[in-house]
Image (cartoon, rainbow, N blue to C red; front, side, top):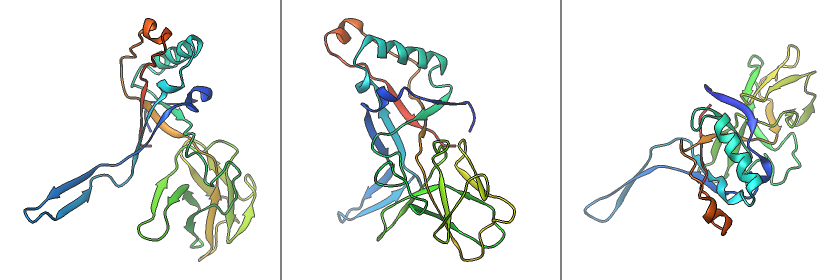
Length: 212
């Protein structure tokens, strides 16, 4: 990923934001009334509005400083999605939360992923920004130790097994983790109306997910 700062957007503001996943689908309505639908994006893209979390002038000043240091849309950064930032349903992760691959006795590196759904068309979301120190990993259901059996890269989401610990052929590799979303500001102009803000209006601070 180019032009990215490994820094987290102010957490107290992020936890009171709005947003979620976006997809892009082409829908063609035929003369018969039937539809042809085609997904243009393989992966969803999340959008957020951080303005909902700005409740004080102090928080607003913090966001302005953060925006200026990122140079508007130029530099990406980490964002904590309140709804979806864990491999599990809660923040208590388990090394068997998510299957991330199957060993072949040779492959040492595996990408963290989170799977949504199970029956019809499960979606595997690549996770590129795990929270440092949160990754737990298991091979064939048995947890292995970070630093001894594997290393994890918090900037790419890659798990790498060390020599002598490469998963055997057929062994399921799984992981549990907390993670952030790589985003950038979706504007180069942060408009703030202080009179309206003092009266209760909330400035818009649009953010959009970026690809590693």
